[in-house]
Image (cartoon, rainbow, N blue to C red; front, side):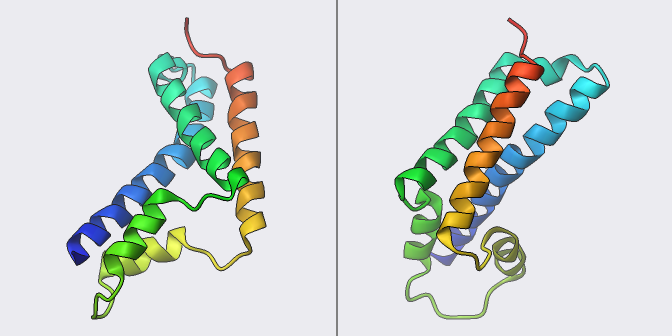
Length: 122
């Protein structure tokens, strides 16, 4: 099951990259007048993803991917692999829960403001 836990961790990292990198891509794409920065399907998926993260945090519900990974790793012996160690270090910071909730809601607000300032195509 350790391979499934690692796959869950990588999926989690890819979602984080999509959310954070997506906003950066929208800003840079709009600055260089690239049409894909206003792609409605991409923009909807992006705002939906961060809205789910923020809603879960505000509701006090732990991230389902983190819970799944923890369950898959429970009782799994052995040292961490390269991917697990580095991706885990990037994803899991030792901060209080309210700090993450504040960050997720602030990021959602940045995405909403971006949606209004750089609206997607109709």
